[in-house]
Length: 214
Image (cartoon, rainbow, N blue to C red; front, side, top):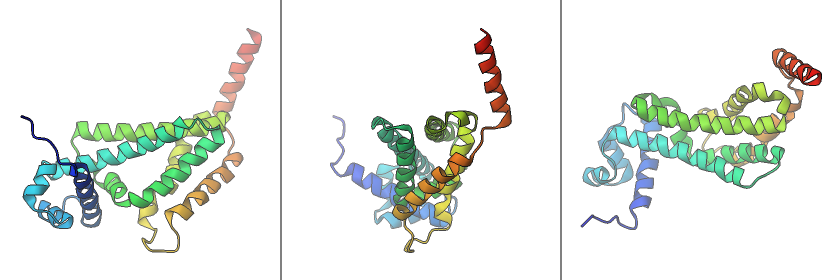
């Protein structure tokens, strides 16, 4: 008979991943040991190995789960079927706010994903690309004329959001909740000033000319 999982299995696993992410973020993945992970989680090593095979698998789960949560956040916003500006605003605000509880996981994702095996890293990076693509699509819905720049604009936007863990004080006066509307307002305030790239504009005029002559 297959061994059944305890009702608290998922909660304990989530706790282990969170504590390990904090340890990796503070000590670095390569420097941290499984003994330190077990101590940080307040469990014995035998219990720790019940939830994770080894340190490498722990890293893969932290990175994979973090990206999966980001993709789920995108899916939740898209499911609301908001108007273009409202959808982009919701994505910006919710991602910025979500990082309040995921700064350690994001630091691990940023700094330690290089230690994953090729297939694992490809899976994580595939999830990251899908998130960027979703943001780029949302930007293009707001400014269709900027479609050629949608991905670079999405990356610039993530540049504002992603690196907050490097400068925000954990107990400072500025929180992720208060930062979220600032990021949204800053991005939306600058978006109207962006002009389509000249090459893209010429291509659009050329397509329009062909369509008119057809």
